[in-house]
Image 1 (spheres, rainbow, N blue to C red):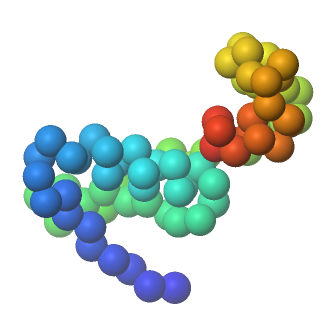
Image 2 (cartoon, rainbow, N blue to C red):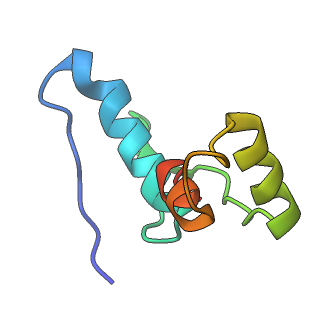
Length: 79
């Protein structure tokens, strides 16, 4: 496993970079830790995978069911 340091080039893009990293962590692709000036790293809370029932509820709430297949809806919602 490798460790990388990621810096957003512009402050305006920090939220975008954070969203991307958190999305990858939710998918189980990476482990995301934020470094603080005191030198300590803090791991964000580990995501718990949604149950199939929760996934269906999210798809229903997003009202994607009539327009997309279940797999397409999961991809759109990053589930």
